[in-house]
Image 1 (cartoon, one colour):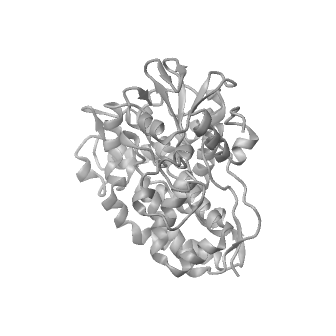
Image 2: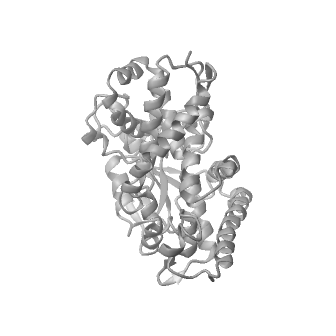
Image 3: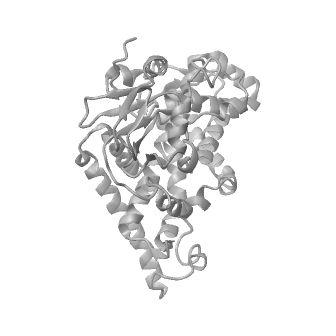
Length: 405
């Protein structure tokens, strides 16, 4: 295969993995010139891991998308990133996620109950899409009646990620911010009605005067001994909403797509339900829901014989690293006989300081969805080939037509 690679081409969108394989072997750092500025693609596991952990060289300051954008908050470097991450740590901590298992299992059951009323449908629309949106809405404090609207805004922002023009994502971002500001102002009105001017001990106010959720926590939070501005609050909430639903939806659709494309795998899970965790981790490795995110180098570097100027955009390509044969045996085969020790090396949730805070939540949702579907629908099967989602740096199915009668 030629080393010509266009991350936005139809061929790469349809199946990027053959391109990644060729790049890993022959061009481990690729330069794409046909954007408003050069875009580099890093594909070997060790290189990607180095990018994710060496934050002094590989900065998030200019955003993690192809275009330059100083987003701040969770897409920043320490110490700023550390402050903001602490604000959400409690809501996504393993103990808190574990405490939500019964509630999430009930949500899965309710969605599958609706599926059971018919004999076929779209697994994306019926389960994979609504489940993560409902869960992140609950954690953040968004009314569930509004989930379709903010899912649309989120998708529109991600779809614009390949555009060099920041204005292409402006309208959905501003619409979401207007909505989120209403949620912040609602909590302010509750505090005002209680005679509180917006300051006070969050532990005494959250859960009594205002709801116990992330929006309330961010409203009252202090960073570096000061209250956040509304601009910072909106940026952070937008980042959580956009990042908190599509990736888990893709994990679930990718997982069932591979299992149903090879019925022996689905039947293997029916026979041995101790493999649920392995199946989820193998899906994350084999089909990284986020194919990669960008970093910007703080000084000029020479990598694999290529000079990369300071402040270049370089993609840490998780999807390529996860299939590096130097790390994973038989990497281009989806297998349920892998050891968890091997699987946990995958980079689908990142590595180091920017490791995805929602990783455990995403894993839990996928495992519970897998459990319920396998128990309820032993005859589940694909009825036609699914379609891929649009954003070039995400990998998932926007349709997953199935039948289960």
